[in-house]
Amino acid sequence: MANARLGRTEQITGWTFIAPALVLLGIFMLYPIFWSLWMSFQVGKGMNFSFGGFANIVRLTKDPVFIRALVNTLTFLVVQVPIMILLALLAAVALNDPKLRFRGFFRTAIFLPCVTSLIAYSTLFKSMFATDGIVNKMLMAIWIIQEPIHWLQDPFWAKVLIIIAITWRWTGYNMVFYLAALQNVDRSIYEAARIDGASGWDQFWQITVPMLKPVILFTTIVSTIGTLQLFDEVNNITQGGPSDSTLTLSLYIYNLTFKFMPSFGYSATVSWVIVLLVAVLSFAQFAIARDRSK
Amino acid sequence: MFNLPHFVARSITYLLLSLAAFVSIFPFFWMVVGATNRSVDIGIGKATFGDQLFVNAANFFATVDAPRIFWNSAFIALVGTVLTLAVSSLAGYGFEMFRSKFRERIFTLMLLLLSIPFAALMVPLFVMISSFKLVGTVAAVVLPGIASIFIIFYFRQATKAFPGELRDAARVDGLNEWQIFFYIYLPTMRSTYAAAIIIVFMANWNNYLWPLIVLNKPEQKTATLVISSLTSSYTPDFGMILFGTILATLPTLIIFFLLQRRFVEGMLGAVK
Image (cartoon, rainbow over all chains, first blue to last red; front, top):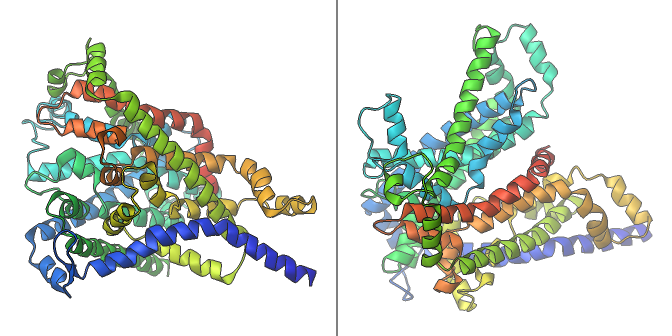
């Protein structure tokens, strides 16, 4: 009896720990989600709504700006996330070696970019990647390029610049997760592999990557979600330009809502495209991970 | 690295790590150098220290109301960090410590919510905040972020490492669950809190899109908003702006270096 009552009281206490978070999530997440779903079926400008059925979805298919934003966003995703994950993994493996010198310095240096504020980051990149800027100067000095690259004016190079910028900022962040996970991998496995004649490269692909799979999956999904929501960098470094070549879905939603004549229903529809993409890609990543483990 | 002699492999590792460190640190060096140069010199890639630091500083303080915007940023980041840690660490602890079948279902649902992008919520949130008459207040900026699913998840993971015997012993001593949380759990989990403080403070201090939407009066704007608006003029004064970015970066850098050791410990604890 006494035990059962203790259990009940404990449960009620437990709820009081969780309740504030649940109430806030309900108000500021669950409710707006349903609201935005409802909104995506509304048409009209400003605050005058009327039910439009699938009108917004039809408009999506005929909207060249939306298509461009979608293609840009997916391009960033497909190119940037794998590069960043691989770089972060390689850095983590190198830094996990206890015999490596200056480990603390390298770790701090590589992590440092993700501590910067967004404005620092975008201002620095804008000034460094100017046509006459320091990056072109350095690349020309070491004979990688002959002519200065028009990073901010050329549609192709502007995309490359955004990819460089995100990779610079977030590789160290992912690396910390891998470093943390690598601490839990038993070193004797590597020794056994070495005795069996496995090269460093083999060890990386046959031992490290499979061992870290849960963490890799976690960081890949978080990075995928982050890239699909890419906004800050493009808004600050390129403003989506030149000629919409770096316009992303999030920036388009922002423009539709706050820059052009407000079109809440349509922008809500665009945002559900992101939700759909996140859902499909996260599911695919889980499925691939499960399949590989068989 | 296949079949290469050991020292060659070693040298390549050091070379690549040095390159990575250079690429990572160079923009910080550029920021400091830039703040001492004229905008024209920055534009043509001058990478040596100049003598314009005080001119740039004076221009910066003449152009923006620095005390106000940094105070706005600091206040929002502090309030946001304290409230987020309070609400989200309590929930993370609760999810791990108190068992009930509903809790697992709610937790799964929450993790699903994590995949909903902010862009999807932006419009309804804005309409909601304006109907509460909160536009232009600190509450408008921080309220939607206080219950952070990521931080709840992080604290739940970290709580798995919290020894149950400690809790049982405290109960025998007659402490109630809240006292256990405040007197036993909080001090024990210092590293976890340190890591969470870095993450949440950085997120709040650097927050851009949402404050841009809900803060509309000039005197409410944060440092991030104001300095970023300087860069979008047609002929931005990069010397002055880089001086401002140093000021805007310092708080997160200081917090990171102060808490760095605990940060790494905290991350280790959470992933285990």
